[in-house]
Image (tube, rainbow, N blue to C red; front, side):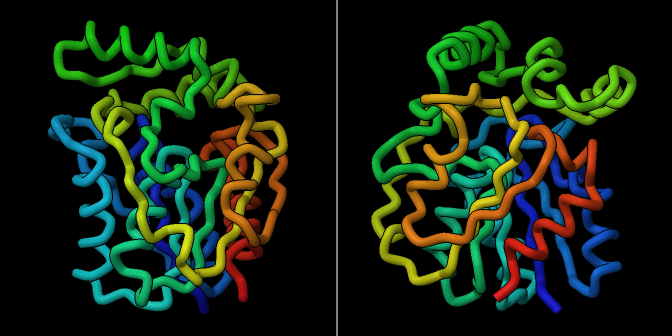
Length: 241
């Protein structure tokens, strides 16, 4: 039995994993899907990246979890990398699912293609609370392009504005590269949330992990909505010893 803690990405909250958790349990595992600070409808959006990290760290510690396979999706990769520095003794493996793997001393914003960087900065300025609402056309064409329109529209209703300050905070990561925690990278082969090529997820992000297990998953960035059962099965493969 494996204990999974599933960390969502930007615009999502913990409920994004609601169809994945039951399948992991069917497969004999335990799974938790906390919501990162500042995320979800009605949440206080005035948070830093440190707040995001502390919320996941506290969840693991407060629930007395150990031997955890910590999964990060998209922005969640930057969170799990920093959580691993804080409580490595509680973690068994890190799984980055089409996730950012931050370099020491950089900001999440720096890993965005220029067109997204400019768009998100403008949307944050115009928002009044330094948040970014993901435009539906980007969601439809780049994040969940493998779904029919009804599925894409229904999934979009689960999203909420994401706090932008965590994208701007510098992530020092002085200890991440030296951690001996095993790592996996789960790559959605049809994921175009970051445009394939120079800005794509794999091998740009996966290559930053050094030695790691690479697992492939057919489908888009939003398999939590489009193929949660297969996603769960791939997470088991990515998280096994």
